[in-house]
Length: 75
Image (spheres, rainbow, N blue to C red):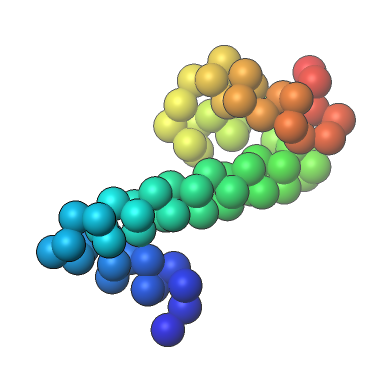
């Protein structure tokens, strides 16, 4: 079983401590995956608007979050 599968199973645990820890770990995993894919999109020439539309957030939100973290993506 993969780590993500194990975390998903743990997130539905009847033990709140186990469930909440799994939710926290899944949130961190999702944030990491999002950052990787935003970087991939910017390297592929996507605009901030295109990324925002796919993520269903505003252009300003995605730019604010990633402009300083993605190499060469200040604009």
